[in-house]
Image (cartoon, rainbow, N blue to C red; front, side, top):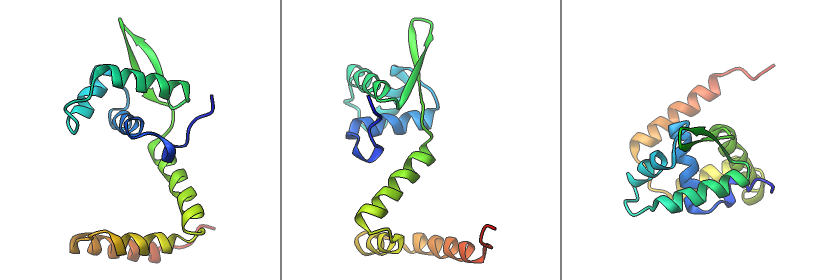
Length: 132
């Protein structure tokens, strides 16, 4: 079964991947506990079936840890999110990342601290020499 694109995953699948990226590796109980920090009603069986689906799709793998399985991501968070963002910029913003930035700044409530951090980031990007 081909791997589903991250941006097309279901909400629980994305949350489980996020928890696994944070943990690095975890049992169903550990992943459920991580998710329960935000969603107290998440069931063990929901996490287990989600992990099984993610494994079939190639997003996670498992190894035996005693009588349990320890799951770990097969794909890196940064690479995954970068690939998804590039697809979104290409498809929705016609390949123009400035349109994405403009849209985010227009529709989101951005604090002064975030604007200052963004200015600092832009300044540092502008001062770097292009890769040869």
